[in-house]
Length: 83
Image 1 (cartoon, one colour):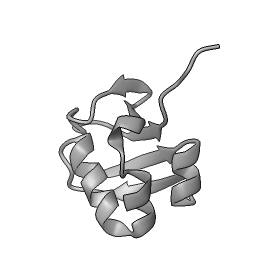
Image 2: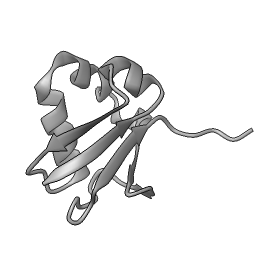
Image 3: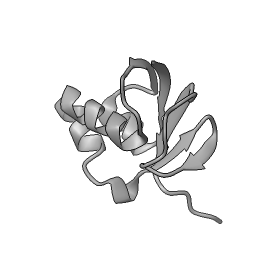
Image 4: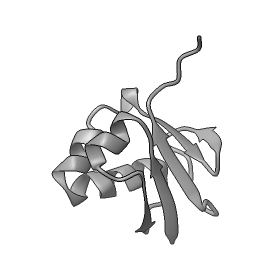
């Protein structure tokens, strides 16, 4: 499947891209993260601490064990703070 992947804040800085189209066979968010980590060191660095990363699937917050079935867009970002 083809996914639009968005990166925000320090994830975007570490990866060097705000967005990209990714062709994947991943079934879950965690599977996709593993594929990305294996690509290059910059992805491995960005996803080295998943406790510091949140994810949204088609603009809905999700967990890393969430299915990618039917998903068109996935966004990775740091935890949000109020204020």
